Structure formats: C-alpha cells, structure tokens
Image (tube, one colour):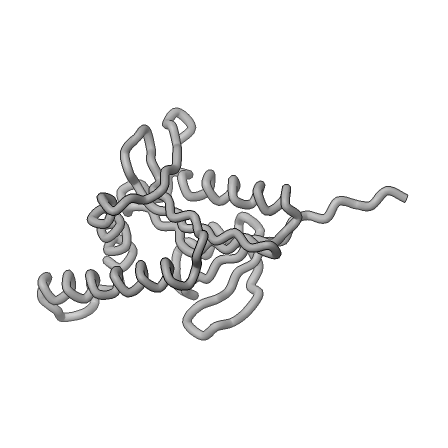
Length: 164
C-alpha cells in the first residue's frame, strides 16, 4: 500500500450508491447463510443501510463522514465523531477486494495519532466475531465494555512520564 496514495474526502449525495456497496460488502458472509433470494437480500441490505445512515446523521452531529480513496478511486468509508473527551470511530469499512493490504491499519494509526496528540482515548464498537477485532487488538485497543453482540474497544494515549 505504501506505493499508493491514500486520501479522504467528505461524502456527497452522489456517493450513496458507493456507500451502500461498501456497507453490503461488510454483510456478505452473514447473508450467505440465509435462504433468501438475491432480491430479498438486496432489499434487506438497502433498508439496513438507510437506517444506519439516518441514525449516524441524526445522532452524531458534526461527525466526519469520509470516503477512503486509494489512488483517487473510492475503496471504503471512515466515519469519525470527535468529542472533547474521546474520538469515536463510528465506522471503518473497506471493500472486500481491498482488505488486508494495510489501508485500514494506516488510517487507524492516523486516528490514534490524533488521540495521542489530544491526550484522549479512541473508541470503536465491534462485533465479537468481526475479523477486524484482531487488527484493533494489535493496535492496542482493549475491551472497555461488553455490549452483548458488540464490544466497546478503547485505545488510551500513552502517558508520558512526568518530569521529577
């Protein structure tokens, strides 16, 4: 990934189809186990995507809703809500064909650097069986709360020793 240019830009109304595609890619494995037609799956995914998008917009005012670009091509989304006492990663998702190449790690490290500079924790909610949980653990996130299906993971800035 280092030889490619990674950038972010705010989402626009024209991105809704792409954002749906990203969302749907995160649910492929789960929906492969249900005996629905492709049309039923698409309808369900569209309903769920619309509900999530509306929820994020209504409940996280002032958030950064961004498209992840790799060499100018959209490959994912990164939604962040910066609060006075924490940086909440609301969502990070990358199209399946672009996963495992370091893009998520690079972006998360940038967010952790922001948390380090601000001296505040970075949090994310993750499903217990999400493969990305290994990445969050590797980056130093720790379980902060058990929310049933989800874990609230938290990364705390490293406290520098105080001079004597």
